[in-house]
Length: 227
Image (cartoon, rainbow, N blue to C red; front, side):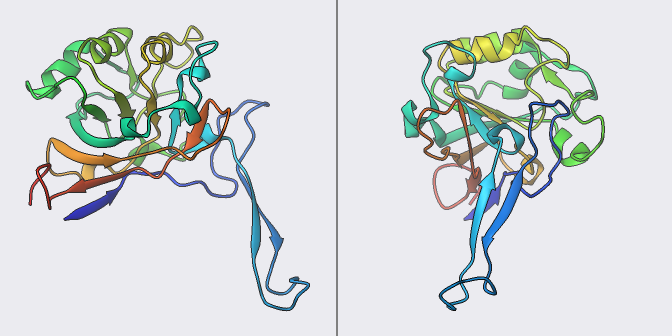
């Protein structure tokens, strides 16, 4: 059995979307071994996080008024078989379309599967000053395909929307259909088979539209993936 970490972790001062309201991640020391008033050498930290800054799940309430928050979602959506679609032929600022998804699925897509969409964009370009301006992105037709094919979760290692599209058609289509979006994945290139067992439950944050995730894929040791 292999366990593959697909998560971009949170770190102090990590790259953040460049706008005034999008705050940087802060990991603040509240107590160090030297400042522990009891003399027991304890550490305590405080996290100041924008959940959208690293690997996370978007719940419907991110865009759908009255939609489910992360704490309302069925945990079973995030645990189970996932189909990996190789879209590495798509380059910078190119749309991933429904035809691309259908071709990459190679007839393996079934209702109830989770989708992991791979371009390797985040692995190659995280930290670039123009990271948010040049990625591959999902075309609205790709969102339609995911809904029509019965996907229960869509995960990806590139940006969901075309840069600059303030209508957010892909988010709206998926989230209105009740399909959570697992964003900012990485290391999908380490997966060796088309189907893996995914464990990607979000942190239980009451009333939030998104939450951090430690996304793990499991290969071998069972019916999914190579032994």
